[in-house]
Image 1: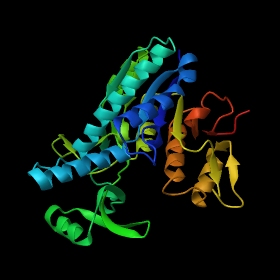
Image 2 (image 1 turned 60 degrees about the horizontal axis):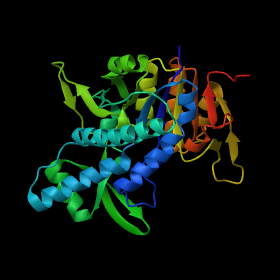
Image 3 (image 1 turned 45 degrees about the vertical axis):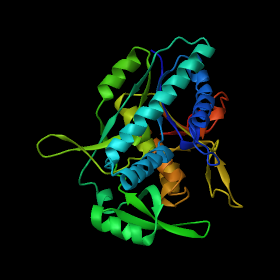
Image 4 (image 1 turned 180 degrees about the horizontal axis):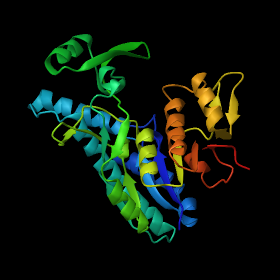
Length: 319
C-alpha cells in the first residue's frame, strides 16, 4: 500500500508578508509551494493537504465590517467566514495543483472537502479568547462593539501605532466530521484538500444538533488530528524555516534535526520553543506520534526534495 502523508501548508504558502494579497500573488505562491510536493507524489505517496487561512479570513471579516457600515449588509458569524475561506483557498489550491500535476505528467484526481471540525463547547479556551482576528479599531469603536455584540478586544501595538483587535477562542479540535469521506477518497488515490484553516468550528448541542462556533481552530492541531483519524503514516508541517531550533536567534541557538518524545517534552516544559510560533507546531507533531503516527516533519517547503530536510520527530530516535 502507498504511504499516506498529511501536509499542513503554512500561511506563507499562499501569501507573503510584503504582498498586497492579490489573487495573482496568491495563485503564484500556491503554485510555487505545490511544486515542492511533487517529489512525494513521484514516490507514490497518497496526500491530504491542509492549509492556513489567517490573512484571508481576516480580510473576509473586514469586508463584512465595511459592508455592514456602508450598506447595512449583515455580518456573517465566524464559522461561516471560515467556511468561506476554506472554499476559496481550497479551490485555489485545487486549481493550482491540477496544473502542477499536468506539468509533471502525474495522473491524479484532486478534491477539496469543506470540513467541519468539532470542538467542546465547554473548552476552557472559550473563557480566555486569545486569537486576534479582523481589523484594528479605535478604543471607542471597540468599546461600542463590546457592548453591542459582546465581542472581546485586546490592545495591539505595531510600529508604535496602537489600536484594538477582536480576540476569539481557539479551542482544541476533538473530531473531524468528514473523516470517513476523506479516508475513502484517499484510498482511491485522490489528493484531498481538507480541514483548511483548522476546519469550520462546530459543536454538538444537547439535542445532538451541529452548531456553528465563534472560534478559530489551530490548523496544525486540526491537521494532526485528521492525520491520526485517517491513519496517516507521516505528518508534515511546512513553515518558513528549514529546521526547528532551541534558543532561536540567540547566541546559543541550536539546530535540531532529530527529536524524540522525551526530548520534545523536556524542551516544551523548559519553554525552549516560541509559544506563539513554534511551540504549537511541536505540540501538533507530538500529538500525531503519540496517537500512532510514525513520523512528523517540520521544514520549509523547498526542502522536501532533499532527503536530509527538516526536523524529524519520532517516538524514539531512529537509526
